Amino acid sequence: MAQDIPAWIDGQLVPADKLEVHFRGLRHKAVSVFVMREGRTLLQRRALGKYHTPGLWANTCCTHPHWDETPRDCALRRLDEELGLHGLNPVYRGQVEYRAEVGGGMTEHELVDIFVAEAGAGTEPAPNAAEVMDTDWLTLPELRARIEARPEAFTPWLRIYLAEHVEMILG
Image 1: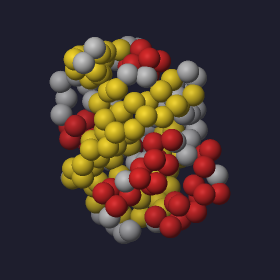
Image 2 (image 1 turned 60 degrees about the vertical axis):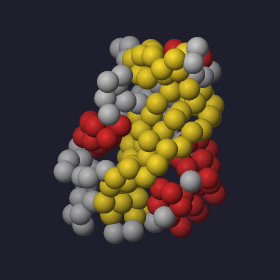
Image 3 (image 1 turned 120 degrees about the horizontal axis):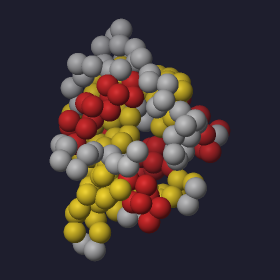
Image 4 (image 1 turned 90 degrees about the vertical axis):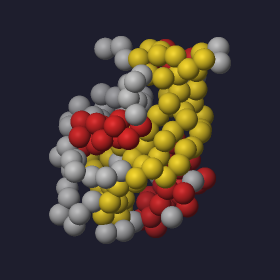
């Protein structure tokens, strides 16, 4: 299933095929969400059927907006589609740009709008098995310890976020 996402081609922001964007390493728009509950961040382990980084741990939700979709609407849509989470209020924290190899000849070169949402004490995800194979709530020290012990188990972007942008995101 082809999906057009906002990408820069020849200096112009245009709708482009998501797979083509990744195989060519083109700069494109993205959204990342961190859901927090009582000092813990909700992580997801990407389903094995994902076209890149399958089985790796990532932040709560990371995706690409549709061509005419606002970043906040995208965040709300994917929280629902991936994790069955509703009624959250994602708050914009800023923008991050990174470039990382994600395997299979693909590169993420993303301009990412970052959102953080606070979840109530009883909030639990209902993961879509096609998107997410597992979830976990971790404190920042627990997450750092796990990444240090097994960096290959985590997506490149989550490692970049924690190494370079943690104060903006979780501070």
